Image (cartoon, rainbow, N blue to C red; front, side, top):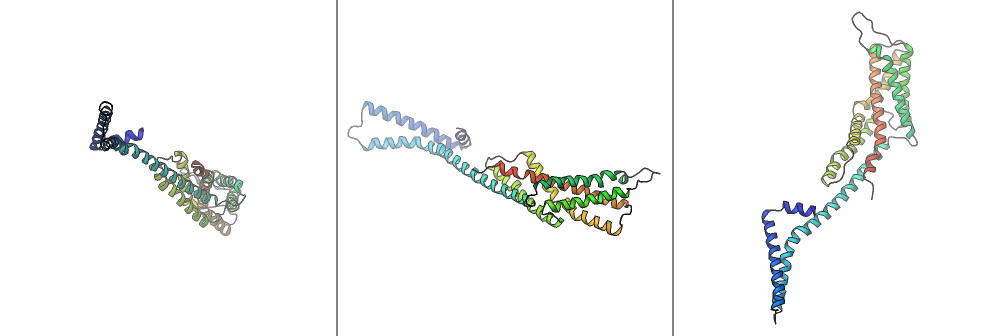
Length: 288
């Protein structure tokens, strides 16, 4: 009924006038033919009653075809389009999930949590424990120096993070991480832009807003500057240890390592969350 009401309200005025006139003429023809048949009969006439009955059916059939059959046809077309879009959405969501999961080494799912833990430890040693040395002191106050022990713990934590990334994933280098992130971004952009528009146009549901926003932000992080944290951390630590040994670090070195720790922590959390959330789009449109 909703479809019929919508089609009727959206039809041009002349179509609605023709439909009303057709129905009224059909009612008059039906009543007239029945009355004539009961009171006078048709006698020896055989063709004329058939003409009147056909005309009566035509008068009722015109609005029926214009609105009822048209509404049924539209409903069938919409259901077919919805099924096709949902199948496509499921396939693209599955591709996105497989691409995300491709970075994980076999039987290494539990290591992703360890990767985040290593990133937190790197952040703690390189950022939290050096905050006093990286804070600009007031006039006449000398900046605090990072001790050799604290600095060595920060360097060791950075190495442990990079090693854990290599152990848990196939992203042992920044180049591999950037290549993987580009594929993930491509799959997600296709799902978030093209498929979302088709789903909305077909009247199908889209992902929960918070889920979509979370994945969108994490993919941006993985494909952004944070993806270079692996190369930056490994290169900086190697340079510091080869040229400066175990001497007290300079403020420039402390600040540089802190920036690498910030990027590493941001990248690790984004990686873990995308891996965890990537299955939800595929589950949102279950296979029939």
